[in-house]
Image (cartoon, rainbow, N blue to C red; front, side, top):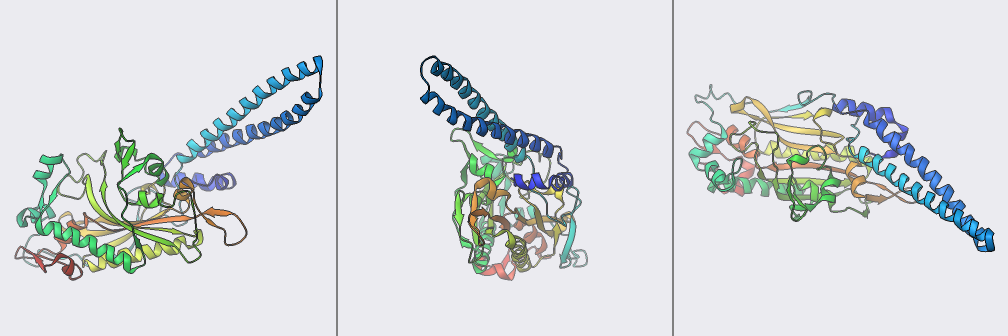
Length: 421
């Protein structure tokens, strides 16, 4: 969540951020009112508590009827102190509940608006003209059916809609892509972690995944555990309640995990193939940095994502995501979208988010101040290096007139073949 001190000092900045996100800016006033009530009740509590301690000395020195009268007053004062303590705690709870509903304050330059109000920052490559090459492009599901790479029918038979089996070369393509991504992360200094796919409610809340999108998360009620939709959740919780030493630079981690999403509210959207499914593989980058280093780390993650997409030899673009399309923890997000020929549009393959101190404040992840004493919150960032969805763009962009699919050069050592046929 955001820093209450920043909200007190710059309420209009937070209101503007809420409006840019298309969210309720009156929450700022709700927080401020609850915060003022908390501070007022707390001041009264501390004042009366001080009087109570002083009054105790008078009671000890008194005798007879005077002592009995003072004891009666002490009992009344104790009840009032208890009530003020309860009121202060309730006001603090009300403040924090409202504060958690406010998304991270967006950074300067983030486009205002919703899903369609992004700004294109870069475009790489040129979409192929399949008509000029003498054949009509097939979509990834047609290609997969013909080459035996994917089985949606048996996936639905075993688990229901939006589940699937990858088969043979299809399974090798996915696993090769993930290994290539993990090697890329290692090359760039990310330490590999194998993470839990089930996490506690406190971790899920701390990472910011039980706010606006709680209905997209699988919850195991009997165990009160949550299946993660990205390893970002476990990676964010890895250093919760810890004080980090960032004097040598950011702490960088990467993980390959199976991800689970209910895709609530997506009925009728991308039901064909594996663009929007309930289970998939994903390689994630995650970094803990000093606040001053967060923007540079964000640019670094984006450059690594671009390297990955360049290696896949397909057209893509980089967009600056609009405020209304940001998740609650993100202050800024860049997406890389690959061209999907049969859809005639770009589709998101990667995203990288600068979450500033939003997650760290919820999870109590700090660093020691480099100047002076005490501690302060760190910044957290995340970025995608590969997901199962990448196969859609790889298959469609690399299909050939003879019905085969070229494997990008960078993936050939990982997949074991030059062509899928």
